[in-house]
Picture 1 (cartoon, rainbow, N blue to C red):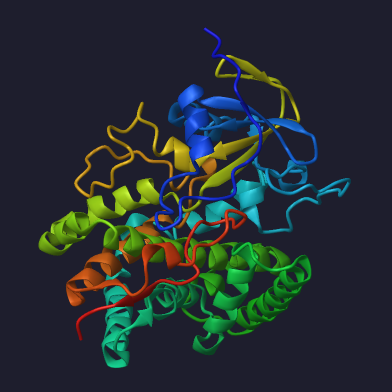
Picture 2: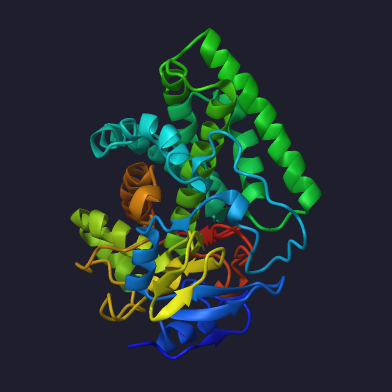
Length: 402
């Protein structure tokens, strides 16, 4: 049976002040009407927005929907005009289909297994403890984003890839510009060029003098320097920004729900469930995009070839047809299977690393600072704009009883 046609007039660009965890209400209302809605992009192109869990999961698993960058000519918030979008540069595999995608992903799969990532737990614990000690030494109040949420994943991913210690701030600053949604095009392009130049030099260094890291290992295969450069960019940005914003936004969510924070403090064994629930509840990678390669029937409607489909991950992960009481943050929730890491061939390669970092960091923070609380009213916490690729916080002022 065909679902009634619903049209979303514009992509929402704001969330509720002081509680930026829920998806924009317009997207929730669209899902309540139908799991798929019509949408007119700013350039006039007619496309679709998928908000329901089952339908969205099916698109992510369907090879008839493409991730290729050169097909992504339409953005829900930006009018690209007549600009011709080029293919993704070599190595930047997130914006590719098979077989190009597999050429870059396959050499990495064995380096990010559950077992290998869990072997990093002791190092993640050490890094976390060092930053908690520094917070104690500095005393309250502090910005948790700069003191805790950003440095932990930055150090971990840079160590994995063999980026020298002194260059970590360089990367985290530039990646914030890539994904933060607040810099001009000129600043973004300049930042991108600076990182590309650095990575070109880093790859050349690893080829000449390999060390014990993932990037050095990759130089032993048949990948070109340009391909390695693109892969390193994807790994550094994805391995840093998503986890950094999960740590910041997740802490904010727990501080706004003292009962859940208390549950985490009282039961360390709850950490695994807590991580999965926060991933579902926050869905910081809030949207994916796909383009139909051929006419496809979806939710009772025909998606014509060449049409862009916006996949609203945050509304799918709050779908009451999949999760009981989905608006509630419940660290003891048993129903997993969220889509925070995507699904199908493009499912997040570094998901196990992110889980290890969060599994260590959240309990350690709330155990070390049992009186941790916001240092400003919740409405004053600086949230990234909806134009940012990854949802999160610009800062999180916190305090505690010293």
